[in-house]
Image (tube, rainbow, N blue to C red):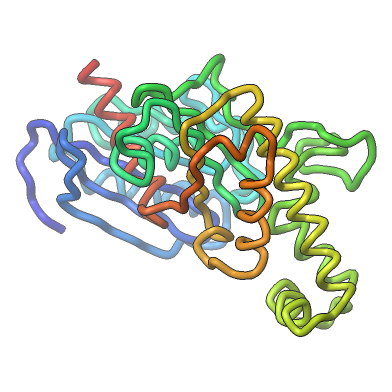
Length: 298
């Protein structure tokens, strides 16, 4: 690890389900140092591993930020099904470990902030970032500032667009991500191919490319539902640019190209420029660091 000076250096940590990533940046967003490590399996040991990483930067940073997949309120991770953690006061714990002011935010919001400031949305005043993964996260950035509302602004995957459907992780039915997220596609692919298939979504896409009607219909239906949700968001938010990030978008496969095709045809989404993430897996940790910098410099 590098040993930078203390002044105006900001730590960003992205806590994922299996890995933790950290970046050290200066006030301009230049990356000074990066670390990536695998996490233990148990929730408690994951938490301790992240705090241990933060402790290694004690005395070397001006502020620290953490991005995490889950709902966040007042510096507390209230719920994260993927991590198995709930009601963890990560902002306070991070401050204790680093000795500097610390902030906590949802990973999609962190990624959105980074894409708008130093990534694919640079130069635009009104940016909508959608992260496509197991579910769908979102962030709205207005003139370089993250719109947070009461703390949950951006939970776009939980827009309830249908009266019926499979149960969502949030406890309701009809949520957008239950039809277009990675878990939804996997569920549909297993229904088509059977539970013994090792890579159901990849196999389904291969079959669709070969003209298999059932596989093609599943992808086309998911793409239409994706376009429907984005069009709703654009009717309300009217972004200049839509940035698609997350693991699904990074693959650039048939699902993603089908999703993209729907956006240009939308009544409202067709008015926005659409682009893919330029920061990839680094977006979450960089956004967390930028948010920490905002916290102490504003």
